[in-house]
Length: 420
Ligand code: ASP
Ligand code: MG
Image (cartoon, rainbow, N blue to C red):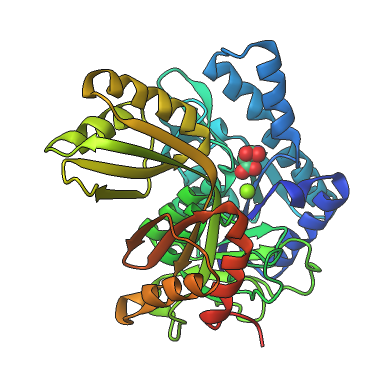
């Protein structure tokens, strides 16, 4: 017997027919003797609609009311799934965040879970009842208000519930059958990755792979909670019940690095289109200048990603290029304009026709020449690199958006990721 948390995203619960199918996946686990908690998203499109309604009424809405409105989508699916389970003879009840309770901090709209008391859920699970939990929401205990975790937050709810229940596995059911070496819409030769480490998955998630919310992977890594990404569109009878093992034939298991015996040097290639580039030309080259630029950006809570600095030929000036999220570009430029007022004459250019392409793999730690091969491959294709950043298990380059697909395809091939 295992304690299993199953999470179903919006497309998996998009209508009542799919909800009935989800019930069959859950029933399979119950019939195998497992204790099951299910975490659900709102039906596909529902949260968007709720957000739109709030904005229609007031662009300067009260974040606490926003939360009470947008959290309602999950309440509907949790109830519907409980009813679907009951009608299939499975004992089940729905749980909203405040009923468990799932406590959060006060950051409405982007709250963090502070504590989950798993006692009540565990007791019910022990009696053979399936707990259907609303994802995306909790309660802020100080003022007793509903709080939501930010878009895509039900992945994080699922991992947090799994940790609170000390579950054996957290299965994330979605509309794809696993994590792929890159986006299969761009590279048809992309392959499903049977096992990937938390660290690699974290990079994939934060660099553009949309399969899991980044925060959920962080949480899983901290608590070593094994995740499996599975397709809810698979026939419910075809998936084996969660037996705490890994499934090499289906899905992707996200686990600790020591459980991965053999891995490629590069496990995956991610791309992010939502980058924008800012270049500051002819900045005076003296101590403290970088701090005068990046300090105010940080104060404005603008995240800077890649940074390149060069000295100009006259030796007295420096050119600085950095990237921010495209949505933050207007704000970043505003901040820079202010800096310009007291830091003198420099020129500012910006563009958001850029993409960041990243190669990711824990194998990089022990192999030399991985980055060099990336640069050589891009140069053979005539692709110019605008900025570079690296970490222990990742190399990212910024290139012109027109070359994104060409670059991803070439790199996928050169690192041996194309399916045979
Ligand atoms: N329903 C929420 C959203 O659309 C949470 C989630 O689906 O993870 O963002
Ligand atoms: Mg999602």
